[in-house]
Length: 339
Image (cartoon, rainbow, N blue to C red; front, top):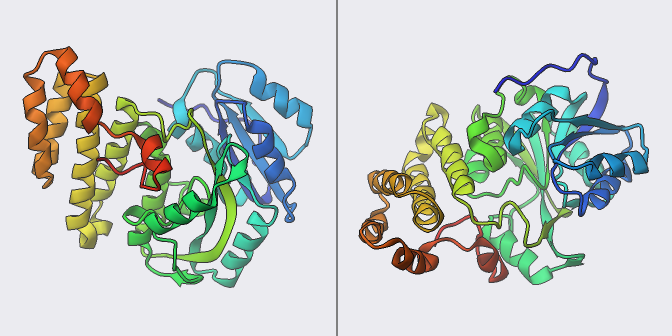
């Protein structure tokens, strides 16, 4: 899909917060956490991808001129909405904030200082909290910091940071990162990666061997709730994760990580197969199983038997094989890692 260009000149500012809004449930809190930053030279580029008028109502209610509101003429989805936001952003530095997350008041100040101290870095990132509703869940925060490779990670420059970005999951582009616009503007986000746009941006930012600087603080909060895009099992989400990993696997810049990337891609194909067995099509499930086997995920062969079963029996069986990210998160496990 071709995105129409916007006739307005890009305003110049230090930092652009990028927000693709679909739900308005927590939007006001997200917006206010940006507008109340200690560093005030910033804007919010909000792309309204929702079918209702609630997002616009909240923007008008807040009434801050630093909020630049754009409504998609048709639903573009997450990837193309953030692609549009990047194109419209006036800041030299960009940060993503989801419509249900919040920043600490010094989020921009701390990450901006890190980038100024390390001009060779394309990105600064931090750890983050997990919110359950309105409350910080310290136990889950600590567990996810461990799972995603930030527990024990020292503050400072990491160059290159390919492994941290695309395998360890330490660099959370969608929650706790500030990155240079000129490092991503020439590599537009493809529609196929959908909700895995953050993994695609991690690929783009890390591929050329540049540096990332880590700030060992929790400077933002990721809100966990039943409607989280990350936590709602779907065939589309699994296929988007696989598409993003396939792009990394085929990128020559990541050749040194290829054996591990193949296993990671096979794991994502396993998720595609299990989701399609339960919710989707046999044809897609079989294609994913075949791909998983090619990428050294031998357990995928276990999924061939259910294809011969009647659909009702298969759904009962696949409930136990399909990933259940929200339940895994509550147990302190990686919600993106298939069973």
